[in-house]
Length: 401
Image (cartoon, rainbow, N blue to C red; front, side, top):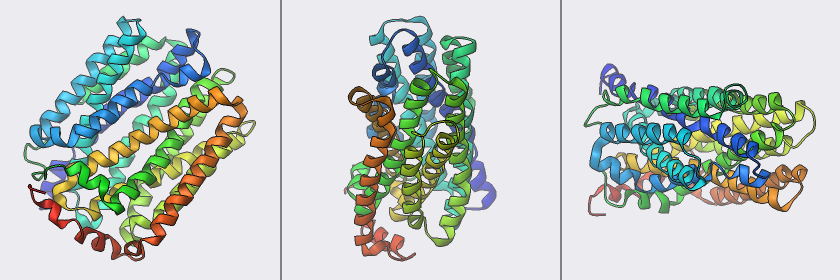
């Protein structure tokens, strides 16, 4: 495919992701603050985003099949509408059960958008420069996290939580015109049970697990900072969220370019180590240690986001690109949800000062176990390992598999 035509098919995915991720991140820092202002405990306030993230996870389980049936264009339009309308509705209702329902609908919509956009980018990228293309996509996708998480804290403090939700709803709606520019035939036909094929493949599932661990560290910070830090130092809470978001975005492009040269699988261990160390540092006193920890969490997560998507699309056949995107996004959001739940659970069991150190130990243990399993897999010992892994799943391209 000529470069000009390739770019023409790819570029709408970038503003779509910008819109959807703004609507994703902004309420994550608005709702916990509002819950705590209404008298909720630390543990309960940290759970306010759980229904949204649960909706995202549920949606990603079926997103590949929906994407294959509707195509990328219609799937993104429906997804953005499912994000915009319930987010606006949240400003008019006060019942916790309805908040949970609207959040689940928002999550289902985001799942469609995220899976479709990532699939369009991964499928359309030149194979030789796939890591760099995904890196640029990650830079654009990182902008909402940089702006929206701290903005949510500031909007809630200055203009009220309803303003933050309306801004999020408007952001989702802004992506709809770009969705109409997506190609109607942009993705190859998918095999049946494609997501299952991705999740049971040893190499791809280990990449997904690595991403989930990095996402858990990020999710923990997102849940911890607005509740535990903002109560005494709102400026520090916003700074931590900003530092993590900026560092994750900065890490995406260099890690993509480096992954094209040395192989994305070689970047997994550094990403996991830096993420776990960042969580431990965030428990420190003052500004310096928490700021360094937030930067570490962001750098590790950015590296893992880029390298895992690059590796998974290299391992598996092109016909599974929608399922790969669904599996990658599923790991991302399961990790975010797990980090949120772990913070809430540990906060209910231990003193606030022990929450992050305990989580850092859990992440370090899980990372060590995963890396040991990866080292035992001889197919990852060289740059040719990706192609070697790929040969074992070529039969999945059959629609009858």
